[in-house]
Image (cartoon, rainbow, N blue to C red):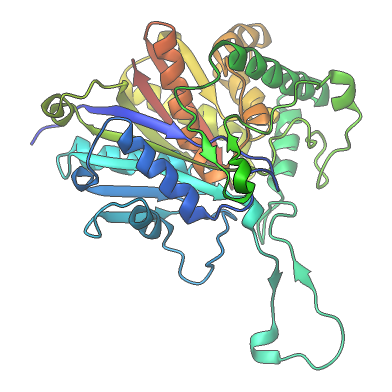
Length: 403
């Protein structure tokens, strides 16, 4: 069988909740099951037709059951899919949600399957504290020390990601003020976009289980701050020893899940489903560990080369705001390190705001930026778009879609 076209037929996410916010009582299985079920319900597709599910998790995406998580498997069963459905839970840090889509894309493209769901989940608010060292040593006297895996969001033998991103930004001539300005832009763009369309095509309302008889429903992302100003941002201290990164020019620790339903074009036509977009190409990269801020640019360049397209062909660009530093560094690289070209290019980047305002539910974000891109292209009458995201220790991934 030859190479086949792969199309997106449905895409949905939960609102992204703030740390300790409205979604704090959802574990990763329940949050995942919500979007897996919804992405099928939106196109009335029976779960029996889904052949494989790939699901991003890990990267401190916690769950109450920390013993044998197999999150994709438990989530699909909770969503009511047949037990015969094949699944894989993967951890590539923040690129996981896009990688999950790519694994299904590859399987469909080369004829192994016809239908797949890809996405991911992060529930930072469920993250447990860790107590190490008692199993073999025991404990008779003295204090015990609990570890917080969320603190610094670093790695055992490497810098916190905020340190690497800030240092590399300075090496590219991008300082604290420029990063704060980008953070303000993110909130402003999000507020304007929410006023226009409310992200209603991609966000599913989530009923909150702890709201009792009130039956509260979360309908919007909680990270957005309408009262943000440059003055407020400038007053924030840097974090974890980073030279430029603050809590204001970085996203929060967010809870959320996102799912994308893909299939071969032939299958979509047979089922009478209208595609939202065609996936033109997808690509992965990996760089030296400290170069996380450069990874999205490298991924964009690779996927454009694969597709035989240029950056000028892209009507819109999404670069995940893991930090403002990441989006700014990658956009400068894509502009050939030319500041004027960079400013021009940024007119097409994250036009609805980004993760600094929306939230960054890490292992769901790759799927989130992809659907945000698709829905915005549709609102603008179609065209090409590219979405790119970085992941811990300088992983990167990008996808080109056509609407």
